[in-house]
Amino acid sequence: MVLRLKEKYEQEVVPAMMRKFNYKNKMAVPKIEKIVLNMGLGKSKEDSKIVEEATDVISTVTGQKPIITKSRKSISNFSIRKGMPVGCKVTLRKSRMYEFLDRFINIALARIRDFQGTSPNSFDGRGNYALGIKEQLIFPEIDFDKVKTTLGMDIAIVTNAKNDEEAKELLSLIGMPFKGEE
Image 1 (cartoon, one colour):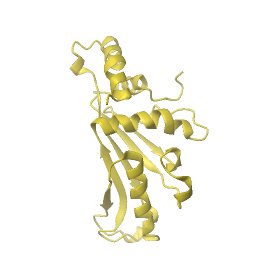
Image 2 (tube, rainbow, N blue to C red):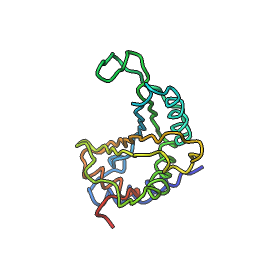
Image 3 (cartoon, helix red, strand yellow):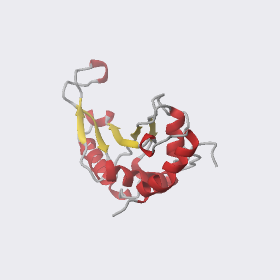
Image 4 (tube, rainbow, N blue to C red):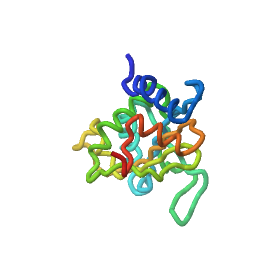
């Protein structure tokens, strides 16, 4: 099965990036290495079912079982004990990464209320892009009736681009809608 986004990357994005940045070899063109989804579970100390619900949400959206992250030390101001679950995360690579990014850009982002584009300022200086989502209901795979609490998540797109300009061009050619672009 050929993935739509990977095919688009190879057919359209690579030649366009080679023309714009004068790469001599197609292997020098930046590519997406991985996508990391992270969900913080601050409310899990009151309700233990939130951890279960969050792992179900991430596994439904990504098709991969998440890792439950636990606190490394106790913090009394936040009522956290060492070893308590504080979040869950999953790292997507290769075909699952392209499949998730395709669904995220083309379906999920369009379902955000009053969406005008993602922020072009969320790059970290090394070519990686991070964005946050306030509720998990933008993904069509999630059954609206089974959701008890709305959970947000962070999505980090890691590229091997040398700077933010190359990474922004890569993501915009793939189809990421940035604010101020038409």
